[in-house]
Length: 473
Ligand SMILES: [Zn+2]
Image (cartoon, rainbow, N blue to C red; front, side, top):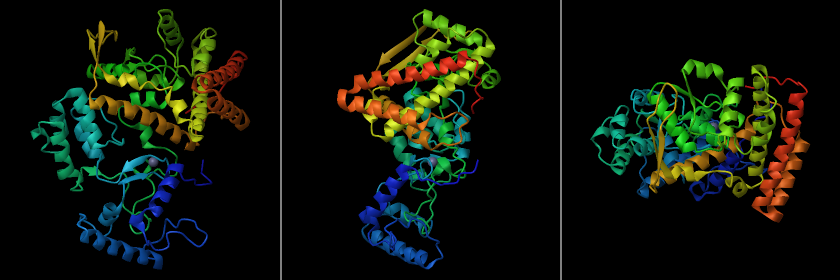
């Protein structure tokens, strides 16, 4: 599965243009070649490399003379950091923007934090965890207990008493001190790279040719998966209920998997971790019956985008083999949906897409009263609306991840799922784009749903005809 062509992510290309046009890189030696293309990479030992190195050393002196602080733990990399206009860099491989400062927990720090698992969800050891975001999220959930938990990786935090005080303490003693407990979003690579940093970020480090991204496996994996699949449902309540499950050491099974187009809603069936991971992203016949039962009770179990296919399949599923086959069709359908949405973003229909998100769920705190870990049921879900900064950050993060996933979706090329035919895709995009520009959001939504409906109908006919799909992923 070798990649023949190495393509840069559009965000990275945008980033390169921004850098070479920025005054901080004025008079940079041979930033573009005779044909006008950017000369991003050079060997440090080459003549140009040496020229660039001299440029960096002069830049360092200039910055210092202006009173800008340049660290001295290395010769060139602190200059590249001090000179960087935004301290944010896009990843060449996946386009994800990460900070160049030392704000991401290294594996050992994550392991230390995970020792406090009774209070919080386990973080993914290979995830991208920004220390300030972690502090904010923990503080929202568990308040001042955050300080003692962060102290496990960042000694001294337990002596703090407010969140701003904690943030300032971490900034001074760990981030600005280039602590080994933290790492930057991209390693320095000066003078080889024009901006002084490796082109792939922390997200794709070491795996830059495989198209696999640790960002897919990031912490709070489940709610992230819900954002990434543009799932309906009260995602915040669902994620908080998952936490209740994990505090009782039971695994929460979605019944209808998010990756097949079902909702992220506060209803799960308890399982052991082994049972849940061996079940994977498949439906059983029992799952289908339970989902139908919930629908009869007035619950929404499937997201708007996958409803046209589910509504057809559910009446045709008669046993486990059918349910398994239906799972594959639902998975392929989800692939079509994300492909269409990612392309809609590419052509600039961000506002249209945003109308499918539900950030409002972020503005509640939720409590589950009378949780029973054996049945997974609870007596009452108490929701209280609030307006604190953490909630709006939560809403922003939800939107950001949903859109970021669309960017990443287009560049993954090692899926084992059949693609939409280009002519079908282009036709759909054109119809939606025209409807949006000529008739507005609501009509464009109708057009999109009609298109998804006709894709669903085709899939349903294949399913009924007994066409077997290969198992994806
Ligand atoms: Zn990346």
